[in-house]
Length: 280
Image 1: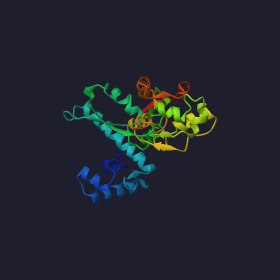
Image 2: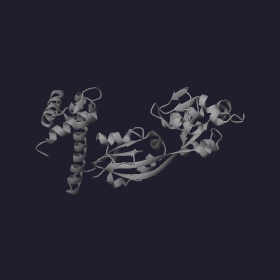
Image 3: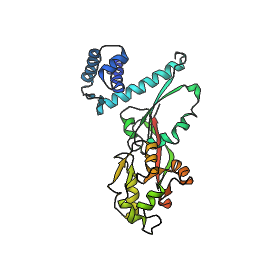
Image 4: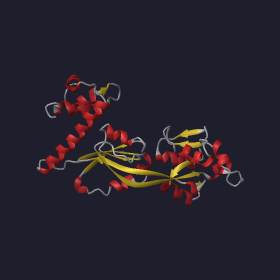
């Protein structure tokens, strides 16, 4: 394997993927962009496959993902070997790349990281991605671990159940009265299909799933706001832009303060979460 995949070429490919461009990779490696390009071409010729999609930012092909994953695992093993031999530089930090969904990042994830022993000297690089897509970053070799909704382990990874994240259908009190039938006697399943709604982004399915369960198949209203941060999403719901499915840990203090009202507390939705990491 070592003779077939020269380490300098493998590390160059990883640098290009991490930095996003050949020029940036050249700066990180202290070589010329031409040298980076030649190394990548040499590696592609050696394996007989195109390894990079040359756009901005550069992305690995399916074959490139295999090499990138190998490069990251090799770097991790090399670091561990140096540490075991006492060759690690004094004060050197351990870089750990993790993919995590926005709601976890805004609620429980950062406090969990503070429990990692300080003597390990971790240095985190967090990549925010929807929990249904974080496993893709593991397959591409872009991260070493991920919080994901996928219960099936990515090849080369172990998986462990974390628990469930509960989401509550909520709205601002005035919005609930105007649009959701609260206090008017209009059933929620009739009113909510026309009510403005807040989505995290276009891959967010929670609001549609809730309304389909409530109505027997109809989606949420076409009057949709997209707010792609966890905190901004909650602020949009509190301000009355629309109703939304808010994580219970964020919703409960606002419910207690009267800034939000529950639309159907008995119909909360749970999202199972799993921890996947490389087997190293």
